Length: 155
Image (cartoon, rainbow, N blue to C red; front, side, top):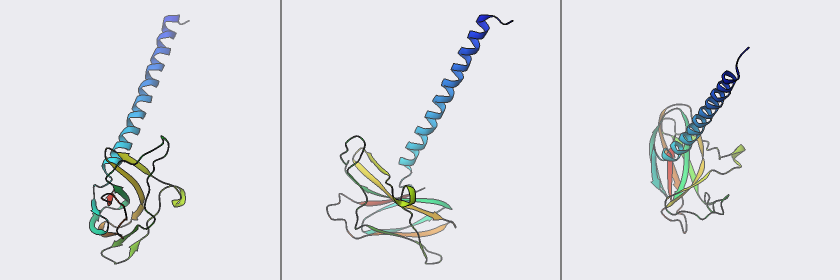
C-alpha cells in the first residue's frame, strides 16, 4: 500500500508537467504570431503603384497591403482593409503565366488584419509557388487618400 505523501507528490508532479506543457504551447503560439508579423516583407516590398521581382522558394507566398498609420479599432475589429480598387498580379518570370492569388480565410471570404506601431496591414492573399524562381509582383492603381501604401511579400 502506498503512502499518502507519495500520492501527493505524484499529483504535484502531474500538475507541474501540465503547467510546463501549457507554457510551452503558449510560447509556440506567440513565436508563430510574431514571426509571421516580422516576415511579412522578408522577400520584398514596394510602393503602390509599382512592381518588384522576387526570388521565391516553393511554398506559400503571402501578399499584404500596408499603410503607414495605425488604424483605429473597437477592440474586436480594425477599421482597415484592402482597398477595393487595388489590383495585384503575380507572374512567373520563366513562363510568363500569372498565378492565382487566393484571398484570406475560408474560400477567400475572410480577412487577415493587423496593426503595429505606426502601421496597418491587411492580407491581400496567398500564392502557391510550385517551382522556386523569379516572380514579378505588380500593384496599382494609385490609392486615393492612401498613407504611403505599399505591398509586402513574404513567406
